[in-house]
Every structure is written in structure tokens, then in C-alpha cells.
Image (cartoon, rainbow, N blue to C red; front, side):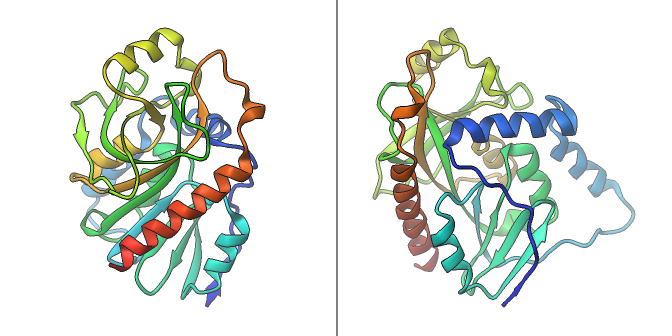
Length: 254
């Protein structure tokens, strides 16, 4: 196994901190404009084909691996590990794992550097907040329908279907780009539309991928004024995150 030194992220909290980190990254790169689609269009118009990195036929995307010890043990079984734009590309026999990114701008930029990524079988493991007062880190859900809203203005389209994983309850998910714009008014109107999970990557990924895929989300925090972050157990999140990771690896090996 070969391994390059990776920058990576060292978060010890849940999705809320991830979303704030994503916001800083988005502003630094291009404000609220979606950099990756523009970047992809520029690549398509070039008179030559830029070098892209190879990947297995099954591609698992994980913004951040919360169980670092378990992930390190898993990487010991990898065939190779490569650092790429602050993230890691980890090749196993049956799949490639892309991890260490924050939000859809970073994610889609990374994917634009992967050979033929739209023809891979895609899987996703991330975290999501609950719009209702119900999802603590001991809840794993499968995305069944995803939608965006006015909080993600670059992607304004209809709801898109996903492939649920029957082992876990299915939920409708909405994607936003900047967390501090999540107001109580927005929260209540979104719940009335039938959505009860919020995250920052799935809708752009589903739109650019062009077809449904399987995605698991681990509950990490609540959206609302009454949230007490101290009640959210990071140890419980890590435990359920590892469980969800194992489930997706089983799906990949089927």
C-alpha cells in the first residue's frame, strides 16, 4: 500500500461545525457561485483532455470519516491512498473512497478530477440535521427524495428521487449552501413541504450525476433555537457512523 500525506480535517463535532467549515470554504473559493460547474464547462471546452485520476467502478463519497481509528484500520487494507486537493482518494479492491471534503463546491471540484465518474456506481455517507426535534446521533436514515430551496439558489429544480436502503427508515432531504440563512420561518415552511432532514451535498451531486444512487445520513444536530448542542453525543454519532459505513460497504460488495 502506498500513502501520501493528506491535509484532511480534524473535526470533533457534528454536522453543524462541518457546515460552518463549508461556508468558509465556499466564500473563499467563489462566494455563493457554484465553482465546479463553471470549472467543468471550462474543461469541456479545452482543446486537450486534462489528466484525471482513475477510480474503481464503485465510488463511495464521505465528507468526513468520524471514526478515525476505525477508518485508519480500514485504510490498512487499502491498495493505495492518494492525497488530492486536500482530500484523500483511497483505493480498495472493490471500490474507491473519496473523503475529506466539505460541501458541494469542494466535492464537485474533486469529482471533476476523477476519470469517468458519472459512469461509476455511486454511494454516499454523510451527516444531516433534523428539521424536527427528533434526530439525535443514534438515528441513521436513507435518503429517498432530495430537494433544494431558495437557500441553495444555484440549484433550483424539482425534487429528485434516490435509491433507499431498506435497512434504515427513508427520509426526504433538502440541501442548502449556507447554514446561517436557515431561519425558523424557512424551517417551518420546509417541514410543511414534507422534508425533515437538511444537509449540504446531496442535491448538486444527484443533479450532476444524473440518476439515483444510495445515500445514508447520520443525524448530528437539530435546526432551531431550542437546540442544546451539549446534549448531542459525539460518541453516539461515531458509533452509528461506523454502522452506516459497514452497511454501505456490504452494499458495495453485493
